[in-house]
Image 1 (cartoon, rainbow, N blue to C red):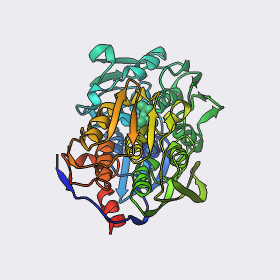
Image 2: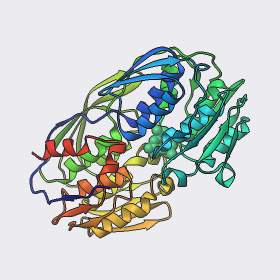
Image 3: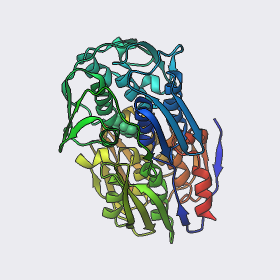
Image 4: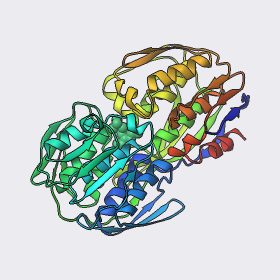
Length: 429
Ligand code: S3P
């Protein structure tokens, strides 16, 4: 825990930022690079705490992974080349490491124990454990295997045909990773599309995988081939600066090389619909992922309703969208976002607490919130809830607050954005 006092800012923001690599893609690059045979070079890897948990898990299973700044060199050992770890694997705060590794470990021929920090130990794992058990997996743990710590005895899995009951890319990815080693075909169907980085990367590493509109089929494969991965900037990190520029009068910011995969760009659609001046240029594709530069300027904003299919495309951005809505005229209504209740913290409760402490008019609903704008934010002492995205939202709110914002813990930001304050400083000076 490390408190920070953020003084009010009276100047426009300006400049060019390149945010760190995408968290979801960085995790997947480590997983598939470790499973492939040969050397995988990962460029612009996110060296935040969450992704390093995935790195350490594979190192504990005998994979050589060397990091130099944001480049990783992974000496993949092949799907059958991982060693049984001699120690329990620690996943820290990382839900993505937790869910995806459970999918993989379920079908590897050894025993593993996995655990996480206080927050991860409260997050539901039955959403992956249940379908994996249908494939023949063997788990044990609290609540009949619903929570970490869990022990996993690797089994011979068989393919399933599964329709996701929750809107979760982590669950989809866990089943696809299990499907990589399961006998026969594994098919996953989604009612609402979620991020598809696992599918894209499995394709790039030579897996036998076919994706249609809302379902993906994977057939087991003995080997994956190493391939270099370029990780675009994380749009979920860029979102904090997109919103900062949109709400601080007269600001102009460019974010370079940001991932623009359509399953992740809900924040751009929301900013556009609320009236922000936002433009995307220089679009390119590398490693199966679209990326480009985003330019955003301060504008007058108005409230909107955010619901339905767009929710998984901006689920991690809802805390910062809530702050955006406090600076827009009229009501912003967010619905169908019940998944926020089971993130690093209950993000509906946390957002409502932080923003109301700062003087916003915001109320929680079961599956979202309603924000009435435009309100002038004052200051106050707020909690990060030990959640990186709540902490960054609070830090950005200080840019439009009239008094000091005191945040109880800035350290948790390094989970996903270790250079956040350096980038913030750059656009403020
Ligand atoms: C992620 C999926 C999302 C997201 C998380 C990262 C991923 O979680 O909130 O930050 O990398 O697959 P869910 O799958 O639980 O929605």
